[in-house]
Length: 221
Image 1 (tube, rainbow, N blue to C red):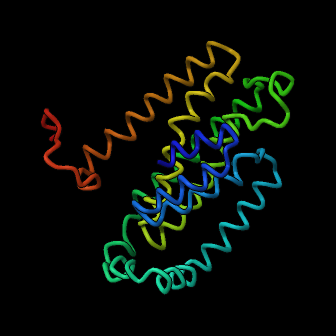
Image 2: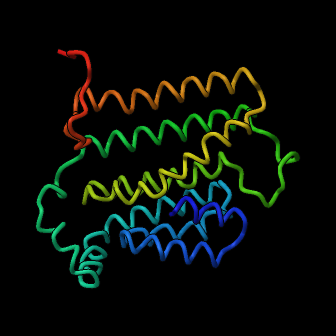
């Protein structure tokens, strides 16, 4: 539903976006966070944005417990998560790996940008947010949510609303790389990274997925 909402956002049908996000909350209330796409979709990657992101992340991290208490007062059904200790003081390895993964993605984009591998602004409407910028903007949001995951590991699920957007952003960002050789290297590296990100936890931490009876057809031991 959120992906459909984003498709309507690309068409500038803002009312439909709001209606679809509200509809998504009927499945899970947390979908309301997706409404921030209305603000983020027109942003451009600037140093000022990085400073604002860093400051906001620190402030929200410090206020996280107070914000969580306010949410629980509003939605008492979430109290079951708080009473379950597995959502607190755990999952640090998975949270850390997610942060490292997206930091690597952003570093690759930064290197490509500095080397002039993306299409020039002359080829793109000055008002248009490029797909590589969208990866960075929503990647920063996810990194913040993963950092909040050190407080409560359920924040990974919230990050999933923005992670699904990468299905749209990453393939389109590839088309913004001018040099075909560079594009091929980036595509191959990305596929390898994604496969590793999926396979390694299945081998060493199969309990993370909670999927049964899936298992490897060969003995990893």
